[in-house]
Amino acid sequence: MSEFWLISAPGDKENVQALERMNTVTSKSNLSYNTKFAIPDFKVGTLDSLVGLSDELGKLDTFAESLIRRMAQSVVEVMEDSKGKAQEHLLANGGLKEKMKCLKIDLTSFVTHFEWDMAKYPAKQPLVSVVDTVAKQLAQIEMDLKSRTAAYNTLKTNLENLEKKSMGNLFTRTLSDIVSKEDFVLDSEYLITLLVIVPKPNYSQWQKTYESLSDMVVPRSTKLITEDKEGGLFTVTLFRKVIEDFKTKAKENKFTVREFYYDEKEIKREREEMARLLSDKKQQYQTSCVALKKGSSTFPDHKVKVTPLGNPDRPAAGQTDRERESEGEGEGPLLRWLKVNFSEAFIAWIHVKALRVFVESVLRYGLPVNFQAVLLQPLKKSSTKRLREVLNSVFRHLDEVAATSILDASVEIPGLQLNNQDYFPYVYFHIDLSLLD
Image (cartoon, rainbow, N blue to C red):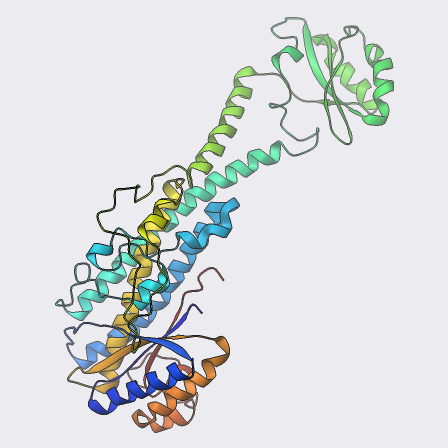
């Protein structure tokens, strides 16, 4: 499952023992895979400021999740024919230890192996400043996302409009990719070549009558250029001064003169525009270089591992360096930007989760700061109800009312920005990595 429960309980002896009981029960019953979730000690400030931060972090959490989901969907849209491979590009690169920054880390490995990024978000700064740094980073990514996706969508729309012109019937579609210079009499003061759409059942009638539809039609000047299911496109050459008379007579015989005059420069421009738009669109997700070239890795092959609670030998889902080397080159600027900034936004989002756990734990359990955060990964959807019952039983002593039943909808919990239906005896936050569902 790609679902995680991030919880915390007081760090005193009684609750540490409760955490150990929880781990024993969930492991034996195969309910969840549990890992410790390390959160640094922040400068707490006043409780009033924490209440304000709790509200702000709740909004930031929602915004960050919405942002990474939009970015994930943008990856799908840009890849088009390779939509099935979109998940491969949703990674948390460079989010672990310094020696692992060259690796491509999948989202689950990053969450289960979370480490606070002290360089990007210094824990020694006031908590308000840390939150502000994360918020500004996410806001900038969203601004850039809007700008880049708007430009891509404009490009896509322009291309679709051009493609529509080449997909209609002979009455509406562009003719620049059908006709050629040789089909027309050009640069003549007296003669002109017209294009006439003739219904298929009337081909024979056209061949017999076109020369007599008007005076001054050049004999044997008609030629079938192309046809579709309904009719064909014929040329006919005549003197300029009888154009209107020819059009009138043609219409009476169910022949339609298509308004088209061969302009070599305009046709060349239209063809080049189509080629350019096609090229620009493809380049948004093609042509790039891979991060790791064969033989260039500084570190030996290794798998990303996590430190599970009670099961330190269990490896996380990761890739070896050489597995990554085989990944193809083929990423253009938009896809490359989405990958890099999705990673940045995702890492920021998990830091927001850590900040929420810290703030809510202090508000719930009080000062001095002393709590233990644990990440649970439910192993089966069907077992989540049983897992919740185990947690409520183990931590019942923290809040008898909440453990007995979900609080009444009218009850408000001062300082805690949680939906009442998500209020439990312990601090709880949900992480869902199903970003493409």
